[in-house]
Image (cartoon, rainbow, N blue to C red; front, side):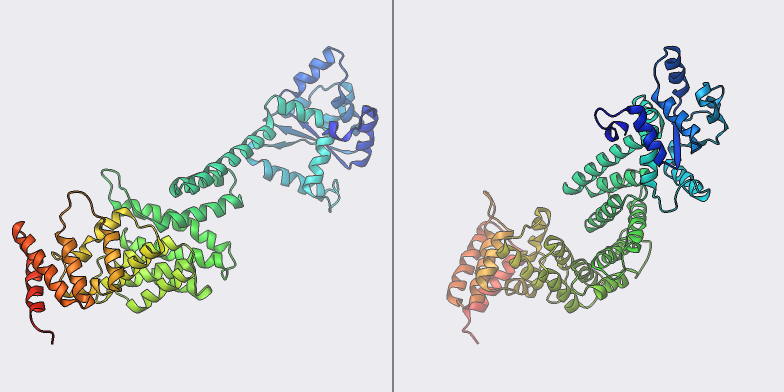
Length: 466
């Protein structure tokens, strides 16, 4: 502004004339109260440097453009003071709050077209010159809260606040809320790159733990379909903004695959489209953690190649990235998977998590009791679970999954321990433990499979080893 350009002690009027001499174009920015203030100053015989600026520009035959902002009517140029009379003969332009950037671009293009602006001059230089010439007009407009500058400034502040909010929401894992905050930003500024990238990131995180809570009267699949369509509508343009061959593209492709799988599994809207996205992601980046985790889960959930699925999980874990996500996909694919060997693989994964002190979701921990339950597991399934890892690890993992609580029955714990003793090869000790367990079962009136398994173990261990 003028106060930044004019040095202390410098003659203000001369400084204005010197700046004007260097300008090819003068923009006279006029707000809704310009005429009112102009007439007010004239009535009080106050010196008005804006009048001096405009009159000087008109006298030097510069290209002078009245720029109307804040809805100012063209009629404000009627019956101007003598010094400004020629201004009414110059074609005015309007800048609207709702299309400010486009209007500015159009103005600059027209000025260049008619030679009023050197072709090499960029927009920032033009607007700096305009601000220097029409500084007082701009200041008056801004202080009165009028015109597009105030709206633009407020919009910028609002966007900055929304960016901060969205970032905080993402940090607190409130990904759906972050997604909506970024959407608000893009409604204000569709080209905001930070918001575009942030919304893609929020969409991917939202998908990683996608679930649906349907309001009363709505079907979960209908709610899921709408949300997934919204997520895909963000990820697909996000993919288009990548090179299509970089790590970002691989990440987005993997998540798009998961979105299609959720659209099949929860929304029932499609079938068989997910795998190609996972494969595309891994073709770009063979160790991509998202592609590995999602494809491994997908293979187990859809009855695919189990060996490949387990290999993909190992690839994902080996990256040491997004470990909790890989574990979630791994445990989710193995949970209640009754295919041969899968219970043992689940115990191996849980044992690794215990050894590495990786967190285990509490709700899942409670549901894993089926692994050691004689009620729902066959003798062969129990043996697979108990022999998946070395005996010492098997016992520690069992205790990790089933911590002792006051008042709990020790029957299952004693049953597991007796079985592990037998597996370790100590037949005599195992026989003694099963006999103690049998007495406890009778005293507590336990029957069913646990009693049958215990009786079978006593019979088996009472015979000489083969």
